[in-house]
Image 1 (tube, one colour):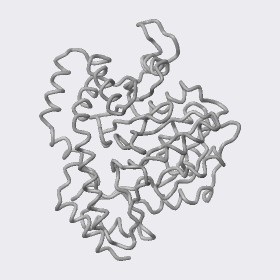
Image 2 (cartoon, one colour):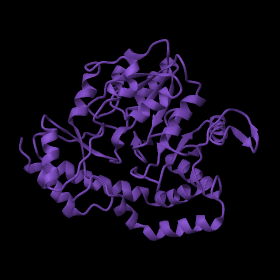
Image 3 (cartoon, helix red, strand yellow):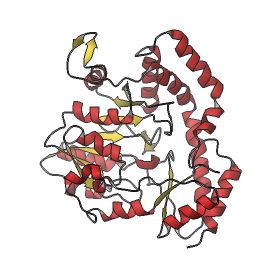
Image 4 (cartoon, helix red, strand yellow):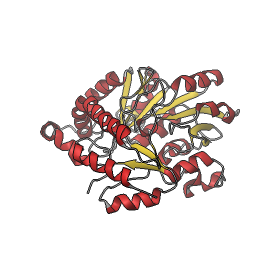
Length: 365
């Protein structure tokens, strides 16, 4: 069986390094906010090209704390793509703000030409989600944000190390949010996340907020949270980071082969926006009309696939209170019925790639 993702393969590539680091952390006797977290924050900030990094417990924490510390809450609106993962929207609504959805473009990210039409006097920010490892058009997003005096938060959960016009995503907006969930490009061995920013005062607020609102023990400046990247995950992420470029390069090679050799006319292959690159967190095709049949066929061929994502957030039960109906965002809804993530992971063999390609091409409606 070829799995849609196989985390064990990536682990096995550098298993001894992970084991050595894990033992170092265990032997240190220090497990929360120690030298591993500090070192990882410095190394990640340098890799991304940002002045500051603050380690947090998860990518969702990075999002909701970002909006909280940017002062966005009840009565405010945040623009977000309609086909985003629901956690992106939760980062907005956990603060009492309202998501305003904008349709995706042909690259599966927010259609920047439709953002201005969604802006009202309540709009306070734009959430730029770099979905599937594809970079958004950050030039236009930042132009709109500056024109309307809006904050910009980048969700880089699926985009570890890709670029827009040569600049690393996460460094354009006020805050860049990262998830290190195990399946991400630089995945931890559990939940983990961080933010990056060039704003020194904002970085300081994140450090205080993540630790119960305390800068000095038992002296609480604000009502904060418990959202600390732990020493074990930070140490293991430091090992992963040394191999992230090779991981991304390997995924690019697999994607290039898919692009060259998948020829089934029922498949629309992913497109890369001019000026962008992709880290290929997912290789997402659009199956034109016969997705369920293709999934069933591939399962019979022992090839696993995933759907990212089968239900747009505006149609989720969790957001029924927003009052949206089916048909409000037809492009996002159509994409939810078409998208299919093919097997993509580090350590995937050429034979496995060939099997995926051959069976995709042999499928007939």
